[in-house]
Length: 94
Image 1 (tube, rainbow, N blue to C red):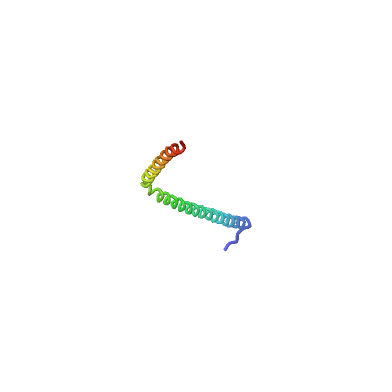
Image 2 (cartoon, rainbow, N blue to C red):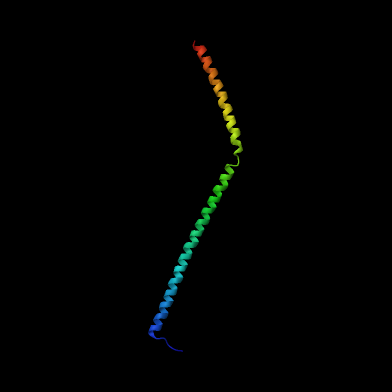
């Protein structure tokens, strides 16, 4: 076996340290990527739940027309009472 010169040994140590730094950088970047993907996944799940809830909330839109008609009927009845009471009140005051 041959021995390495001091220059060759320094180059090997430099390569080993550089490789270790690259491995640490890749591990750090992959950790950040995993955290970002997890965050995106959680937010997509939240958005999906919101959209599902919105779909459920709008599934009863057929009742809007019936409710509007009933409100119009109540307002019409209230107007009749108002007019009647206005006429009666004028007769009572005179």
